[in-house]
Length: 379
Image (cartoon, rainbow, N blue to C red; front, side):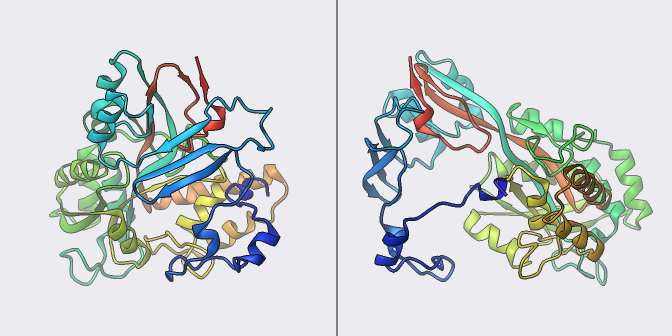
């Protein structure tokens, strides 16, 4: 239960009733509420001003309940969104800002080599992977008529071992990633080193699997990729295009902003796509509910693979009520084995966080990539 309360926030009952904000905002439907546009709460900082997409100013809350429990060295925060990586780094180098998240991998050495600046890194609670349409009888974006090549597990296994994760790590990510063998971050309950062993690329074995599945001559397919969501997301996809060509899969890539990319997954309009996933509860059930369970009104909202297994669904649903932790962990391991055997996803890597800041700032880089300024200290 505590794990599932991670992102539940408390609102004052009298305040919400007085401002007609008791019901949850229908964000998807375009609704706006008083709670969405007005500050409230008991946090460490108070809102001074906000200009969306331009500047937000916060100041310390003198009445904060945790005033004596945290350093609270940061008294004022000026948050300036800088979407362009080069501009963001320039602002840090010039002293315009003291702290930035997401230093581009190509600029890490430049920042860390500058006097008075540091780059702090840590493994993120996020894994990057490819999703495959394994469930439809025929694909829309391939050149194979009347059947779905991705429905054959041998084709999926071929794709898995054709991807050279270590080359992506070295060349595309400049060592700022860790090759993955499972779509689960290492911090999550259910993770094991054995599950997360990334396979070595084996083009010969991949071609043999393709031939065994009846695709010795390969096929073509479209890959959908975001170009503004994950670290070097478009470059990861471009690298995969070349790697899959070596086993006869001709991939045409469509790179779109996340606002256009994610709806393709949610509306089942992509056969092959890149996605990243973090686990707020740090438990495997979260992944199974969203990415593995059959799509229905409650489950599988991000399962763009069309994978569906009633028996596995029942096992996933049983996790919510199993109170014997040893038995629950056994069930989790069993479900993961099925996911790995089916190869409905192709894991690529665990993403690495790179925070740039002035050297006199002392803080840890948490796996959830959230800057908790009440913990910051100054030397």
